[in-house]
Amino acid sequence: MKENWWQGLTKIGMRPGMERTADLLRRLGNPQLRYPIVHVAGTNGKGSTATLITAALMSQGYRVGLTTSPDLGQINERVMINLEPLDPQAWNRLGDQVEAAGSQMTDIPTFFEAVTALAFLAFAEHAVDVAVVEVGLGGRLDATNVIPSPMLTVITPIAFDHMDRLGNTIEQIASEKAGVIKNGSRVVIARQPYPAAKDVLLEKSKQMGVEFFEAELSPECDSAGVWWSDSEAGAMRVPLLGAYQMENVATARAALSVLQKLGWISDWEALRKSWATVKWPGRFQVVSHNPLWVIDGAHNLHGVMGLVNTLLRDPWNRYRWHLIFGSCSA
Image: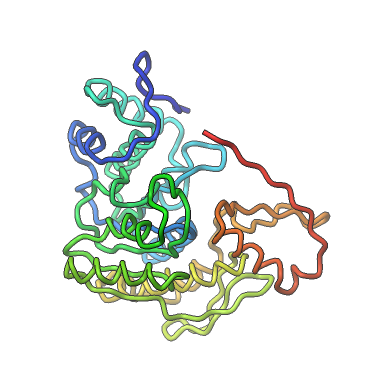
C-alpha cells in the first residue's frame, strides 16, 4: 500500500500548522465539510476512547469513519470505516488523488497531513454519517484541527508528553490541547490527573461559550475488563484490559450522554452488546496465555504509571513479570 507521497519532491518531516492541510483539502473539494465530526484530543487514551465512541455510534446503525495514529504495522489501519481498515485498493487510489493535489502545492504537506487528507476523502467517498477523528499531536496546530466546529469535542487525560513541542508545564500543554475547543461545539473531558489542566480546559470553554461536561462514571475492572451498572443500559462490560481503561470508558460514557441529547444514541441494548465485544489492540493486549505475553503502548510517564497500576492489581500481581522495552528515535 501507498506509504510515501510527493515522489521526486523534497520530503518534509513533522511541522506544526494547518495551512498546508487546509490548502490540500481545498484542492480535494473540502471533504471534511460533508459530515459531522467527533474530535478526540488528549495525551493518553485517545485511541481507546475514540474506538468506544465509534462502536457506540455503529450500534445505532450509523456508518462511522475513524482515523487514529499511529498504526500497528499496516498503514491502512489509520483510516477505518465501521472499524474495518480502509480497503488497500481504495487506500492507493485515494492516496494517488492526495499526491496529485499536494504535488502542485508550493509548500509540500507532511506525511501526517497527507494521511489526514486521505482519511477525510475516504469518509466522504464512503458517505459516512459521522466521523470520529483523533488528534495526532497537541491540538491547536494539529492537522486535524482544520475541521470546522465539531459536533462534539472529547479530551482525554492530559499529562507530560512531547514537551519539546507543547511546552514544559502542564498549563502550556493543556493550552495546546485546548486549541481544539471551538465555538458552537460541546466539550467532554476525562477526569484530569492534573487539576491545572482542567482549569485551562474550563477557561477555554468559557471563552468559546461551549457547554462543558466532565466524566463522572466510576467503573470497576477485573481480569475480563471494565464493568459497571449503567443507568440506561443496565449491567455493562467492556473487554478492554488495563486499569487505565476505566477512565477511558468513563470519558466515552460521558460523551454518549451528550450524543444522546443530540439524538444520536437511543438503543442502549444495542450499545451494550456492541461494547461487550469491542477491541483495541496494543493496550494491555494479551497475545499469549501460555506463556503469558502482554503488549502495551505506554510511552510516557502517565501511561507507564497506568500500566504499573494494572500490574499491581489482581490477577496480574500474581505473576513475576519480565519487561522488554523498545523505542526508536526520529
